Length: 136
Ligand SMILES: [Zn+2]
Image (cartoon, rainbow, N blue to C red; front, side, top):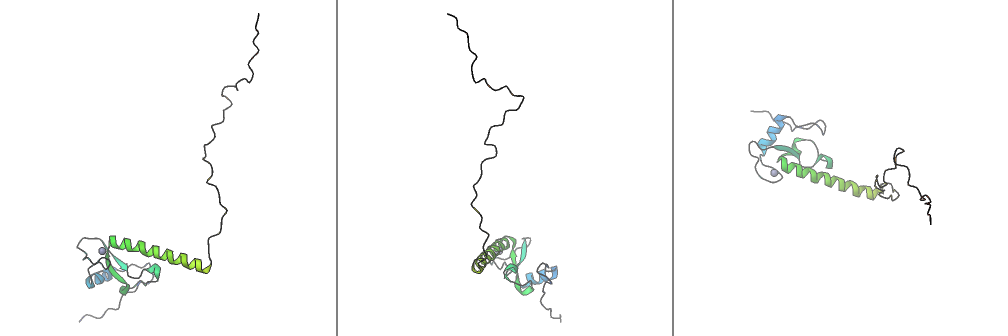
């Protein structure tokens, strides 16, 4: 009789589940918990935190399910967006807002002025034409 195994709990949120835990979770359920499709041999798959770590989920075996890499990436993006939304609403409720800045113009393009004439360039054009002597 095999001994009963306590569930794996990561020491920190950054601790990755070791291969034996990965295998155990896969053996328990080898279909993607996000789309429901089975994970085929050779397909890339990840362990997904059902309740995301950034949203208060725990890094433990009972919070991990296999998922396709593609499905996992999509879910992670949604989790991050949810976290950002929650943080923004919370800040608003707490009255924490970004410092107000004076409205600034977009500025002018860097090279709007023509180049200054260099010292070696031609002398400035004469303002007055020399008096031409006219004889009658
Ligand atoms: Zn999937």
